[in-house]
Length: 86
Image (cartoon, rainbow, N blue to C red):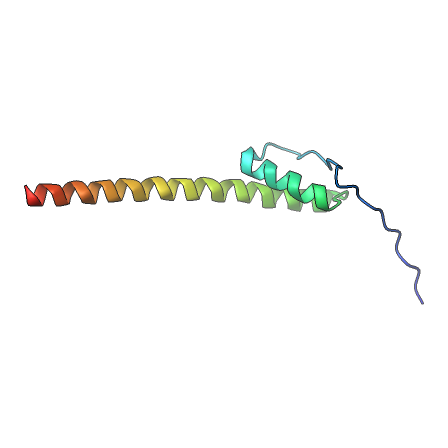
């Protein structure tokens, strides 16, 4: 039988690695959540985590943009309806 791997217990209050670059508010929150529960100590894992968190930041921005555009479209539609009834 093979040798059992060495395991390290990670305490809940462990802060983990700092992100290698700015990830924005939502990306940084995701980084902190994941590094609080999992250990990322190899460069490949850290880079993949940074890309994931960066993508989360982008998706949050796109979602916000879509909400704002939807509000503009609704307001424009309501204004057109008012003009038709006047």
